[in-house]
Length: 43
Image 1: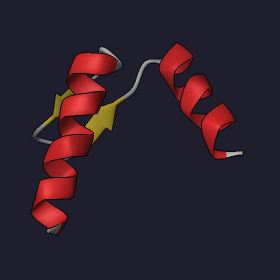
Image 2: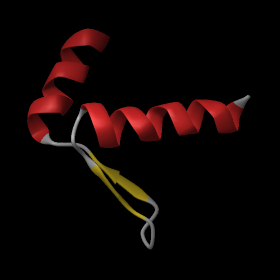
Image 3: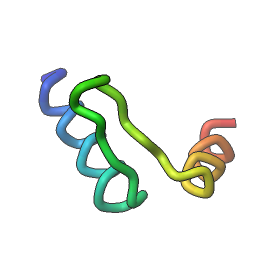
Image 4: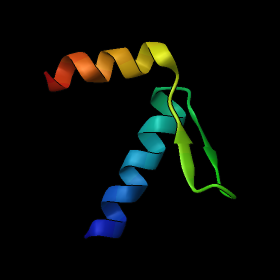
């Protein structure tokens, strides 16, 4: 179940938010404008 959640998050970050992934550093890159939108939704 956790693996499926990670795949969903990965897809949203890359396709919907136009972010990226650094596989060597194991990081997601989320554009600032998208991060602001996510922050507003969470608060």
